[in-house]
Length: 513
Image 1 (cartoon, one colour):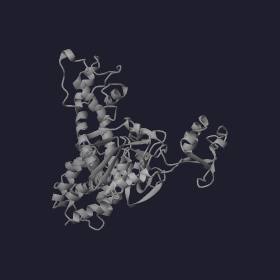
Image 2: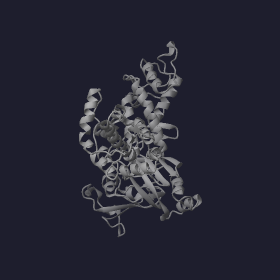
Image 3: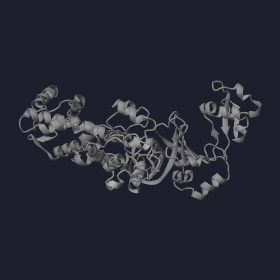
Image 4: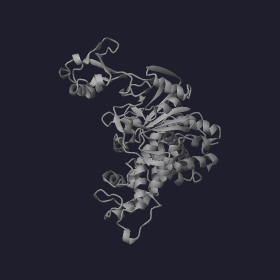
């Protein structure tokens, strides 16, 4: 069998450039990783993709995989697909060699991008602190070729999360919207309630008809009437875009409608890449918190066992994206008030009302000595204490006022973030739930505790542990992985959704890209 001459690596760019220029093909994407190719062919300089200058079955599989890059939000041209379809290996040894090296280079690059993401989160989204999986595309490709299972092994690289498949379907749909010209912008208008009549109604209906095939044009007589069918379509839109579902067309709803199809397409691509940043194996039992749509899912063996609302950090105190392991549950927890919150949040309240600490079961100690002698808050001149000079440690007792509620879920991490119950249940009814100082409040702590304990002990034991009012730590027999993520294009029980970019991370990442 003929072998490759690696002089071809030196002349590859010039040769392909001359072919491309002769037939109006772009070479903007022609970035060759010569080091990877040298390593791939180091032990075997034979052709991998050609036999007597003709395609093998695995060549067809590789080309099909590259042509399908568009379904992942990639441009096949970035993986040399245009040049690969242009070159004819049967024409000459030179073109055969060019085809061989370009196919290997493009396939290795695409494999890496699908397995771990096209962009490095450290640059594209620095707030993403979930470690990416290690992946060696060269070793993986060599093994797949040896085992003659290339097609299967390539498909195994595609993330198996259902959300990835749903976003992929949405990507194709929004690409169609873009190809068809998208939608017109809706002009500024007053607040529109059901049964209102306004000149903007036809534009709103036309906008929604692009993405909602069930919506039909009314009679000419009712063209400006905000009638029930359109109200239902607006509510559906609001639900799919993380808005308050009230059927009222205000500035937020209009703003979401005016995001262009191209911008939405870009948003889906950004979030497909975030999905590829996740570890390939999330674990048999894990929790996944999606910050933008304020939701927690509990997964066991690939099946969603629980889904509940959560409250996450404010914009000025955001919840980070990270992974950790839940190791303990604490029933009737103490709240060791973080020093920053004590200075900035609780001190002003005590200065306003000298009984605040007493009424909320907050104990005062010398700084850093919560196990030492307790201080009488009434004996301290709180107006002489400042945010810069705060020589105290605060701790809140378990009970009805405790900010952590009845259960705390401990997962050690450098941000001191944890999951917990809350006495402020009404906040879960809000659409946008950025209210915490970084930690994550959960809607149904009892159900989450039962899942975390794998229903051992039973639910009744959890209720009893809470009811006795005593502070009690329970170590999990098997720690549970927890992922706090940031997906603004996602999927819930009803299908594909967009979520607000509450921390402005999509915007910053778009600028990077």
